Image 1 (cartoon, rainbow, N blue to C red):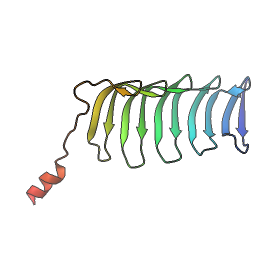
Image 2: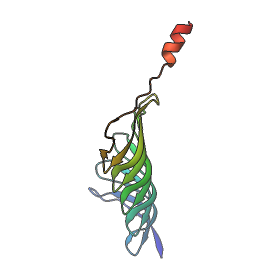
Image 3: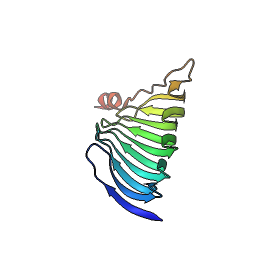
Length: 139
């Protein structure tokens, strides 16, 4: 049986969502004491499936969870517009991924192994954005 719950305790996460057998189960929203927030799905008390984790500084992760950790495809988006779009495994950047600058220019396109770059010779791919340069030449 599923129960809707709202938990508000000082110094403990504020949670609204569903419980099953005394654990979070189903769609929920959780606000942690440090100001971070998670919105997504819990299965038997663990973040599983699609979820969004929002840090209090404005960064957020939007992607897949398994076993209470970021696992599978996802994005980290910073308030200034930078984006990492790739794969995660057990909360690490893992597998292929692309890191974009604020203006959408690709800064790095590489493969990661538990947060460490696997690229031996080419650590980053830089594409020059010539839009401003071209516009200035035309005027």
